[in-house]
Image 1 (cartoon, rainbow, N blue to C red):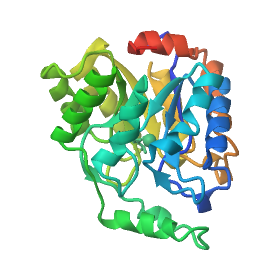
Image 2 (cartoon, helix red, strand yellow; image 1 turned 135 degrees about the horizontal axis):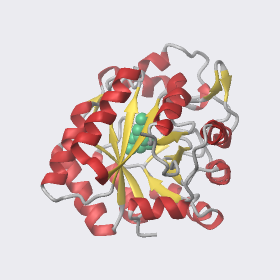
Image 3 (cartoon, rainbow, N blue to C red; image 1 turned 45 degrees about the vertical axis):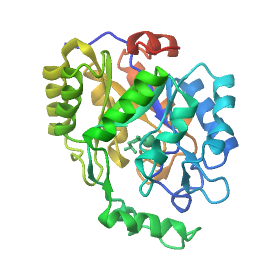
Length: 305
Ligand code: KMH
Ligand code: ZN
């Protein structure tokens, strides 16, 4: 049965996977990140998921001062929910990944629900003529990279950021086991519903972007969390829009943005994050679905506002 609930669109504007060589449109500087976030919010995103990059070379950074160069402006210019990554980027320690969020005390932060291999090297093989030396080194590192999110790490983030700062979470689940990890923390009373469950498809190391997997993740999330969760979907690369379209039509929420795909259609780079938000909004509205406002997202996710 199709839900009539408005679809919450999250836009992840820059991330820490793509590098400057891959697209001239990837937001890098604080000004570019502000413009990307404001444009995405104006196009219909009610949540903006953020990472910081070194303005000089685009490398993902954990430096809180860099965050402070764009976050206040985004808050001032939009009503969107700010979601700060605690996933950071390959190579950062868990402490580094958490540092900015602990100071910024955002309404939302991402929380990755299990350790996994994280392979970016297929991207490495697609590009040449790198703009910066760090890019091939960074992508090559993921031939043997473990994205660390142990039970103890997760518990620390829940306590320090959740209990300590009133931040609520986008629970990133890259495979079926991550849903059970989340249920474990719910059973222990360390998290309270409603849970925003971001099911992630198509990253090497996580569950593949196969339609059967989408339905399976949805089914298990429903079994484990029932009415206590808001289901959302992101798929990397070319599966971004098809998966978001299916999720929206199944009563789910969606995430788009240049963090997850650099493209607007086959072989065509997105020039802005807003283009991707506008596209999924258009598709969903054409299918008679409504788009959630930031106020609706805050209520449904029980955010501190
Ligand atoms: N890069 C995404 C697939 C995080 O920032 O904590 C997942 C993500 C992780 O957004
Ligand atoms: Zn992220």
